[in-house]
Image (cartoon, rainbow, N blue to C red; front, side):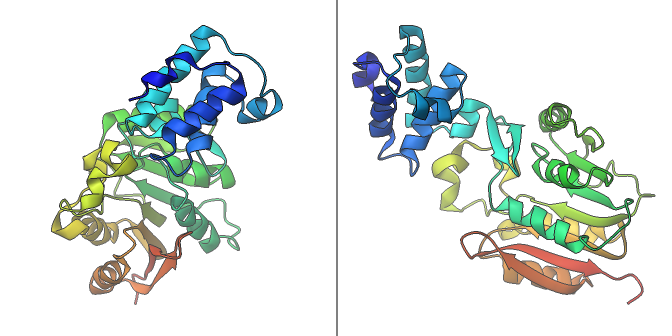
Amino acid sequence: MINEHKAFLPCSIFSVVEQGTIALSTLSDSAKLDAQLLLAHVLNKEVTYLLTWPEKVISAVELSAFQQLLTRRVNGEPIAYILGEKEFWSLTLKVSPVTLIPRPDTEILVEQVLSLFENHNSPNIRGLDLGTGTGAIALALASENPHWQLDAVDYNHAAVELAKQNAQHLKLTQVNIYQSDWFTQVDGQHKFDFIVSNPPYIDKNDQHLEQGDVSFEPKSALVADEGGFKDIRFIAEKARKYLKNNSYLLFEHGFEQAGQVQKILIELGYSQVQSFKDYSNNDRITQATWLINE
């Protein structure tokens, strides 16, 4: 498909980025940025370096390495998997095909958790992140509140190891990361001020599963039975045992699922149920309060 890229001439940074942009123009909404990120990765430089030295000639070895990465991107592989990392909440996270790629909309979930405790002076806030994947949510929260006590769990052992690597790299090792099938390994003696989750919520018949980056991501982290609501319902039901009085449960979910998620939470006895919009103005986060004495 991209045989014409075997001899980019001249091999300046500018020309290589331009050729890469052309190759990706019908495949990516961010073709030029993708090409820049791939070349910067090969050169072990920041993108700003490419902009500063556009006429610098790259070597044949560097060109070949770029072409190999470009081929993977042309074939649809997510840029984050190719580079092995993704920015989230100003944190650089290692990523791999064993986990979902952290997305900007999930930062809304982090923002909402932080807003719940912005006027809370206690350093003893305890939180639980269910299905942590790369550790993005828990590590973002830890970066803002290093004295919080945070647990982060995932069913996938490889994901747990990846999240631990991210925690160590970011020096956020106060987050307790471990393997658990939802609550199975969570200490029932611990009560949490909040529980947060970006669980599987896509229906198995959803056509979007075969499109774009999602087609490369692990289906186990995407798909849930009962039209996408099984895991949300399960978590909401079991979470009541692990939440303190006047504590919070927050979900990320599909852009058309807010109504049903709210219904599930209300049926299970939660109160003050409300949803919040993502950067595209779609309902993406739903929050509820658990009041034991209500």
